[in-house]
Length: 134
Length: 90
Image (cartoon, rainbow over all chains, first blue to last red):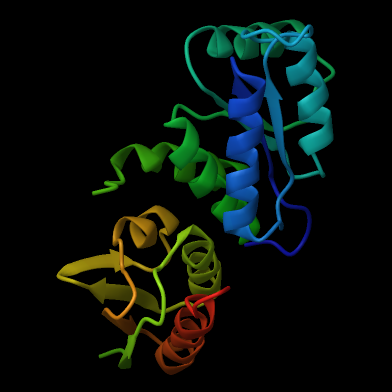
């Protein structure tokens, strides 16, 4: 645990409202202690993903400890991968979490809130795969 | 053998997402291992998804059990959050 900057979180979804709603939920659960930024939908507001929105969200979410990226499905992952491979000017470190979207966002945000480092925040999101809700 | 401490309280309201988050954040500050149990399920208090998955509801007894060097402080802090955060109307 460190006392300084917290890891930020970016939620990449095909849907702007899904990304925004998931960010709102995770923010409520964690008491607003973490920078969690939605990047959902295309630039003109349709369902899809936008590399520019993700780039902008990464910068907004970073406060010096790096950013964990959670993609929802399919082309969200491709968009994130494309950005990471083409842009050398992104915040560092970055980690992409292979995790269920809602549970992963909540678990990652709690881990970030208690000051976990980027590896531990990404791991918290990925462990959400094993959490039972019933 | 590490110190162990436990206390049971009765929930005044359902254990929703927000108090589950507050519990997990508070639990992470303690070195002790902390377990919550209610209705036959046992979870790690440091796992927010575990606490949510417990599905503890109003009127149900919840036991907080901590084992480790700060067990007593951990139980005091977590039971207080459980009592405060599940008060009806919050």
